[in-house]
Length: 195
Image (cartoon, rainbow, N blue to C red; front, side, top):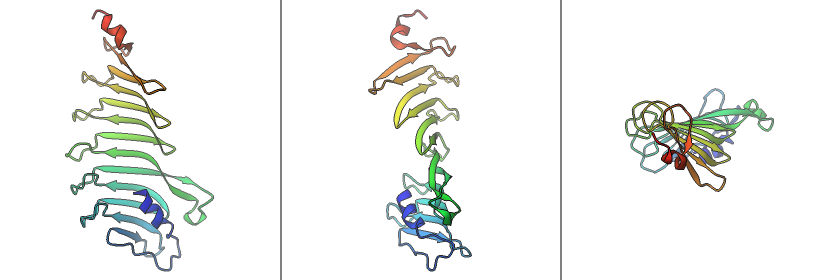
């Protein structure tokens, strides 16, 4: 999606003589008074229906809405932060969007059930409602593109009672909270501890 946005965004400016018209699948929209790029719609699978919309502020991506499974319903929302840049004075110092949050409807009901938080464009943490009961029951921690910890609420209490902690080489270690106090024990030790 950003590839399309970036290629069209370069053409936006306050005094655009003739904004590009796009094509059958990609259609930019411009503010009639300023000529600034406001939106790009995209038919990614060529079925004649728009399944991705990127909202722009000139050359900066603000947010995007996508129909990932092409069923006609938006199921992914991307939110971008604008970072100031001396390289882009025409857009008020705003340089492209930096991804900061993604919301995903993982089930067909259209309700957001997965939240991804990004820092500096990199995934940092994820919260997810895997059971569909409206409560988060899975937490992920990421660092430098690697999954560090997955915490799970397997008892429906609202707090994690199982954790997978990944070592530098990617090997997981299971930890459990046997009595619901928040104290986790390696699974090997926990299995030998009487309940």
